Length: 335
Image (cartoon, rainbow, N blue to C red; front, side, top):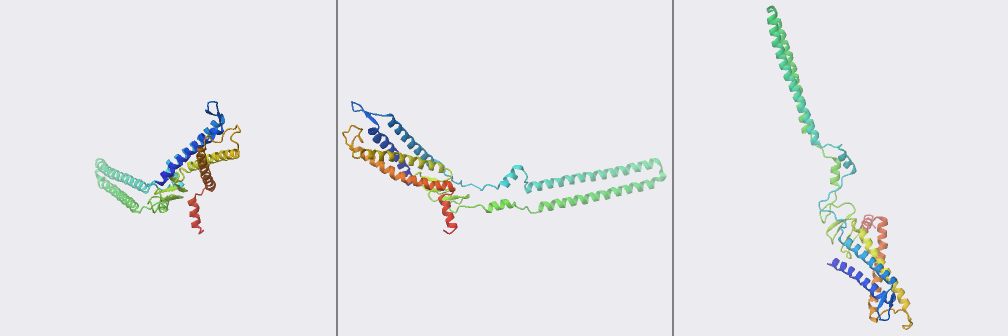
């Protein structure tokens, strides 16, 4: 509620400054009175009025942008950004997950087992076929050599059996090795573990708190590079709207100095002056002095305030350290 009142008061003060400067101060000074009593504003009067209105509009626009722009609030589901090395490895595809490695190993083992099984079947079939053909050949050639040929066939079958047993033993060894590799524990990436452990959480909003982010007790959220909470803009001043805040206080200070210089010059120009000397009057009516006094007070107070803010923010911009950063640094160093 206080922020809305301050923001509304800011617009009202700028509107009051435009009215008092352009329609109370300038017409008696930069106007020509004709014979009928009607006053015509000169080109200089129109120029200064338009220039003052432009500066006031720029100040109001910058204020509206600073009030409605996100100051840099951290989303509730925000997560830390991965390290540049991890991003490069993920983009280039150099890193492979442990599950994909296990899948490739198991597929390789399965293919080798299938290959060895097929070779074993070929050996058995070829061995049997070679034995049968040898027996028939020996029977057809000479019956006297039957015993020798059958012994040779038995020897060939025995050799094939030995080769098949060796292949089975080798396949069993490969299968055991694949099972052992699959049962091995999967180790976590140390970079991921370090990033998870280094995740800083806000103890008020219970969300991720990036570096140089601070929690605003009024907005109930964490703001990145938060400088302060300004009631005049009804918003925090952070990384998102700091530029608009600087523009707002800059244009406001220009508007205050502009009107204060004109009022001061006009005051000393009118002091001790004869009202019948034929020169333009200082004011059309004595009641118009009240708006000019109010304009002088407004320009003096808010001009000093915005100039001090400009000097203070100049230090923030040049050092890249917000007020809270400097306070945190002083507390860490024990000052």
